[in-house]
Length: 498
Image (cartoon, rainbow, N blue to C red):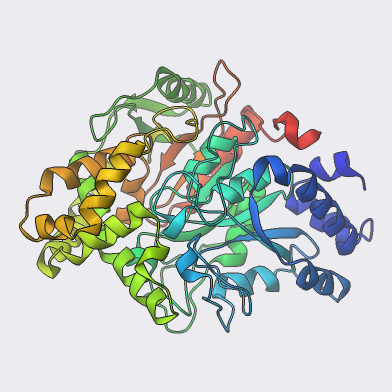
């Protein structure tokens, strides 16, 4: 198998070739490592190679539905025993887990050959992947633009042809956003569908789910079969699928009622290309026989954005406390996360609990919507993939923020309740380019980004579908139907093909 042949196969097909004896796991690993070496200087998707571990594994007996397929995990949540999990932060470079995360063990049990970890923003708090620790990851479609985040390294690695699919997780759009930026498919499972243990019960109060970014729907279905199911000690157990997802995916979804909206839930601008992406998808759905009409759930998007930001106020300070037990200092954090810690330290338990309780309001409103519609269609992104640095504080703004934080004035203002408008602005600025994805996270519902649109400039721009809790089967069925109607597997950036 050569480079071109490697790119022509998804993970399912590569596993079949290994099972048939046409290619060895070692040969596939060599191809993946060669592609990684060729594109790394331009893309910077993989921040830690595990070559020796991978070669040892590829040389041994492998079993499972994905035996022998090269694979990458994300440098956050997905603990690999003996390998640091840094979350893209200098504060956690000494964080070395002693046991595999359940998801990593399941990937290994499926026969995957893990050979590295992918980039993410520090603590996974942004929709871009540009940590100071490892440097920014570039979008293989246009290097001056972001591949999204927080699973931006995973998406860039798949789009660059290093692997056919890679692991990620999604706490506010972190699978769907980079998939949309890079012309790939990603499904975010329902809350509790995949275990986040044993080190964590529910990541980000249950807002985050584990999954993969892939080039084919069947790869994502197979990965969900590998990952789904509770582990001992999980907070709750949800109903399993009635059959394997790779089988359910092939069934006809029937005639679906699909509502759609292109309006930003936080009142910010939506790029005409993002609007066109949804309109094109709506037309395609109608041609496939589905009932499509403009309709959105009745939810206060600005309030939801504020609730989402308070998730950071609770979680990031807690992550820093853990880092400090490993010897980290506050100065090891990037400036904006130091500010999040200060703001979070000054949010009362009552205020945080109030914001968490509002998640139920959003879930009930969305549940009412799904009483009338099977799925909800929106843009995944409010604009095509943004250029690096778009929306970042200017040097002058960073100096002012640094002074306010360093002198303690920021903490005083927060304690006095004088930063409410600033908090609202942080929420809006942070989500301006990605306002559509957080609803799925706070409500625990499954959602997916499907690569159905490319801009006039040749940039990918996916669309998002959300479904009711536990409806991964229906989403996969529709995705498979769309994939057959408008194939995307062969669309790769020139950088990948060399």
